[in-house]
Amino acid sequence: MPEKTHTMSTALQDLLEKKGPIRKIGVVGMGYVGIPSAVLYAASPFTEHVWGFQRDSPSSGYKIAMLNRGESPLQGDEPGLPALLREVVNAGRFRCTPDFTHIRNVDAVTLAIQTPFRNPADLEPDLSALTEGIRLVGKNLSRGTLVVLESTITPGTTQGFARQILEEESGLVAGKDFALAHAPERVMVGRLLRNIREHDRIIGGIDAVSTRRAAELYSRVLTTGKVIPMSAMAAEITKTAENTFRDLQIAAINELALYCEAMGVNVYDVREGIASLKGEGITRAVLYPGAGVGGHCLTKDTYHLERGAHLARERLDFPVGIESLYVVARKLNDFMPHHMARLTIDALHRAGVTPNGAKVALLGWAFIRNSDDARNTPAAPYRDALRELGADVIVHDPYVSDFPGITIHRDLETVLTGSHAIVIFTGHDAYNALRAEDVKRLSGCVHPAIIDGRNLIDPTDFITHGFVYKGIGRGDKNNHPLV
Image (tube, rainbow, N blue to C red):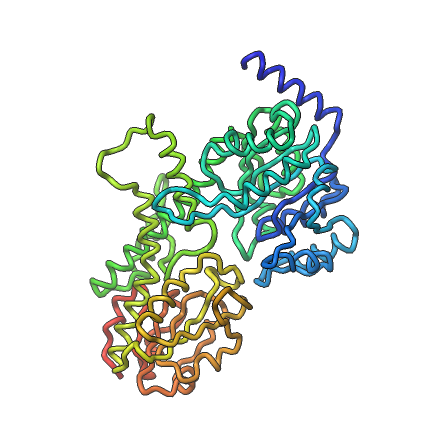
């Protein structure tokens, strides 16, 4: 270790030892990551108090009052979260505030702020929200504080612009006056508390002292999960790569589903056959096909990884003229909502109905089952495609209460009534109960169309009742005789 770096690390270690254990924590960003994290920290016996920081903006300021009443603004099914939130609020261990000056009195502060891409083609992320959050932390940063970035970021961000902003705003030096690390979130909506407790935590500090300090923070909320230390850059790559790999796996089964449709085969039979091959050294991680991939992570993390590689272009050895495998996978998953549109159009035509003027019941606006998370929902491009053809698309979701520019209905019968096509976009449990005779009665059509993007219904039952059926990967049924 160079002498200067060693001296800085020693100074930081001495400062942290003088400061003592982490007792007061700040969490910037009250969303799907920040809320459960703050609640778990507040429930820890090692924690004295937790501040949740949320801008009092027109779009999300309502969360402040809700959280301080002990009410979760997350409307999906999140086991354990509502009860634990009420507990820590009633105990006075958690408080949400728009006043970022409270950061001056915490021992550690984490940031979980979205980092989307406006246009993936130019590999330029929209870091405006994250930048603002980092500046607010920097303006109020005290010596000896640990700062952790949990947002998914382009490799190089922690040591790069994040460190630069924090130092400029605070007048302090990272690695000497404050600790800095990247510990990416690894949660899925519907299992937030469980994921934070049970998933191993990747922690990459800018130095060994920062890594150890961050490990102290996260160890208090881990149960079966363990800390995996590495460099900040390695942690950034780990997060972007794990989501990129999942996106790649989904693309693989989605492409296979398209192939099976073309060849008249049930992709789920093929999938079961592939997954049956087990044994020493054999891994067949076969996921499920579907109507599209949504959410905040998978839709953009590939581009963060690609951007990191492009920034290292001079050192990158790569085959000339070949597009990134990861980007191709991303494009294929983006294609699936358009394929759903094609299946809908084909089904309507078989039923003797043109898309122009047809009523389409779109079931599910959230991107994932039993959740209210509708970020980057694949239902949006599908809706746009059908509306361009003149269809009247009516959206139903049992969890999503509102969405900018979209009317979301909660009454399923109202949405199904008079519909020429019923399109299952999200695998909500509520849609498992769809009965062919009931749906047909509400539709009022001789041959209503039903398009299943999540393999939820029994095709034979609906076909027997006179429906025109289409399903992702159901080549065995998609060209059935009309009953």
